Length: 97
Length: 112
Length: 328
Image (cartoon, rainbow over all chains, first blue to last red; front, side):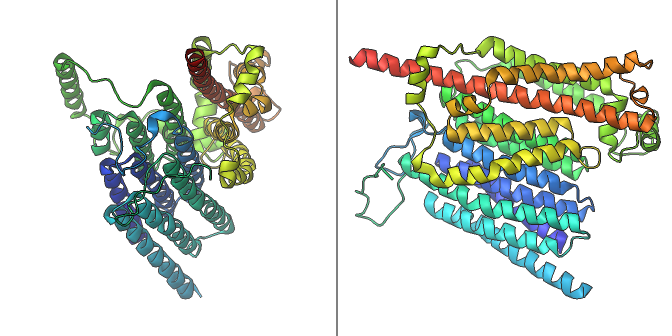
């Protein structure tokens, strides 16, 4: 059951990466990275149990904190002019590659 | 006793995985940023919580159990905060939700 | 691979920073899968956390999109392709991953694995190799970090003029009443993060951890405080001169441990002579140098962040002054 759970979390991480690469607006990508981070915390905890080394839980705690701080940092520094969208439409202003 | 513990743990893990996968599918299929964020925010926190509770049933000694409790508290505290901050920042920066036709003339109110 | 390709091709720098965060995490997951716990710890904390934050502060100063390159760098591509091909050709001769007769498993590593418990007496072999067998290399690493901090200070140090302090507080970009939820959650979390940093520092003998990771976590807590409550408040809490002093003290502390063991008759960084019992001497030596490493790493990260963010504030103040001059 643990291995099945690990595989399921891994599949969700791949889905999050797809949204992170595709996502049309910037905030989609921030959301994808946040979700990727939460799933990584779960993946590390599950892998710790699967491989029989419960020291991985320390890494999981660190990663949960770092994920939170990174998303807050991104949002804190996105208050400048260069990141705003046009106020009346639902598309973003930045150039798409 | 062991069988009951294993079974409950497996059940919690199963519920947690189902929630996480549905959150992931929702991330890909929903049409708009705010709906996606709703899907991810709810299922992320609850799915992570259920998976961690399921892992608690598998833990061999008390220190690991305590660490899992700490990770659970941290996730429950941090997950909804991130959703709230993300939505607030998106709203303030002008990303409008895709409402019904005819409602898009609402201006953003930046004093909240 | 997909993530690396996407990083190179995308022009929007903000998205690139996000993808760099994902890339750092994937590396940490690989290290976890290969059962290397300390490396995964450090990669998760530094590569996915602090690097993303620092790159973000830089991006807010430089702008969001990359400059379009006018020429196709074909020559560089050719050089890289040839070098990559040569490297791959060189690895064809290496033994298989984890095979038992690889050279690294024969000479030095068995001695570390077999003798570490008797000679040093702590369960975590990575810490014993890092802090006791190879203490001199770790000294080099700490000096490198210290030099990076000095480099940032030399290039970016903002001379704070006292008459601009009113401007700085008027430009105070902390999130006040608009973000009550975030401020309260941060107030709850920061003591916990600091305590966890101390736990990782002192638990490095038994589990993953040690000085480097603890320093990074400590700096992350201070950076969180500075981001939410404003840079000027953070400067009042953590005085910049004090932090610069701590940086130097960390490196000095590390070197002094080596010197004390010289004075006591052993080699440089030989911990056996630090106390009456060799094992107790090893424990004491490892404790002291990990503390030195933690101090230096934490204070260098804080200095780098304060200087980057202070630079950005200076830029904003200059922009505001220019706007006021042009409009008045």
